[in-house]
Each structure stands twice: as C-alpha cells, then as structure tokens.
Image 1 (cartoon, rainbow, N blue to C red):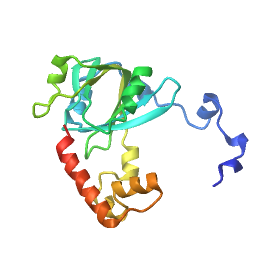
Image 2 (tube, rainbow, N blue to C red; image 1 turned 180 degrees about the vertical axis):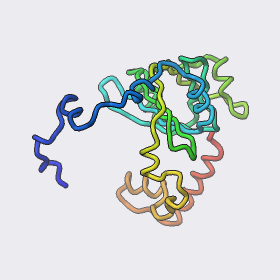
Image 3 (cartoon, one colour; image 1 turned 45 degrees about the horizontal axis):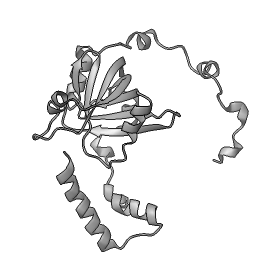
Length: 216
C-alpha cells in the first residue's frame, strides 16, 4: 500500500476522534494502575529475566532497548525505586543518552511462559554508587552503572498480545538459519555486498566467542 494514497479524512488527528472508535475503558483497567510496587509486582520482577526499556531524547526521538539477565536481575530497592544493571553492550548508549536528556522511562517485564506482562513507567537516572553496583554484581563483576527508576505507574497487562502471537508455543518457533546470520546481515547493510561465506562463518564464530567473554 502506498502511503501517499491514504485519504486524509481517515487519519486520526486527536484523542477525541480516537476514543470514538472504541468502547469506554473498563473500570478495572483504570483501577488496576498503581503508583508503587506491590507484592505481586515485586514477585513478577523477581521472576523476570527480560525487559524492554523505552526512552526518548529531548526532541521526542524514541528508542526501545532489550535488557536481559538472570531472573531477578532488576532489584526492587523499595516500593518506589528499581535498580537496573547496565551490562556490557555495543556502547551505542542510545538509552543512557536519552535518559540524560529526558528521564521519562517505560519498562515492560516478561517472564518465559507467562502470557501476561508487567508495565512500569517512571523517571530514570544514571548512578554509580559503589554500594549499589556491588549488589548488582555477577561473578564478582559489578556493572559500570545502574539505571535507577523512580516508579510512577505500575500495572499488569493482559495476555491478548501473547495469545495472538503464540510467542511461547514451541510449535511456532522459527528456524534462525532461514535468515542470514547477524554478521551477514550487518555486513550487507553496511557495505551493500554479500560477504565471502567462509569469512562470514569465521566472523560469526568470533561473535559467539565474544558473547561468551563479554556478557559481564
């Protein structure tokens, strides 16, 4: 479909027009929104090995970054405060730079096998306090910094998206080999050419070794 063919009369321009398309929000969906981490949210976070971190810079340019580690890698310091270790990555620092410009942050916690998720929004800051980083260490290696999130809203999200996607259903798992390797994709994206197969294999193997050396 060519975007230029869209009829402007069918483009939604404001919230009033948006809400006309949907029935009123269920009362429970409104009441479920909390302002602090309760015992159920705390338990969910303790079980979660993965979250998506949403940030924006000062001009509103958005980014979503995956964060993963052993279950419970995000620490609940108190009912209003979370600590997320910043493990080694590609050093683009997109999320961290955004937080410095705009602290508003959204988190989506996932647990393998759970169809419901946990959403938390708040204000983030970057900290290097040794006492905090030491408590986020793995195998004696503390992170360089932590993302501290002051919680503003907390709520459980329903299972519909995961039920529709059948994300955890092994019968829906796809064969990664049906697409080129990460190295092959990036090589072609950056050079415009397909790489030599033996060279790409060597680079892919080197990447796997790098993963093993630099996870922490």
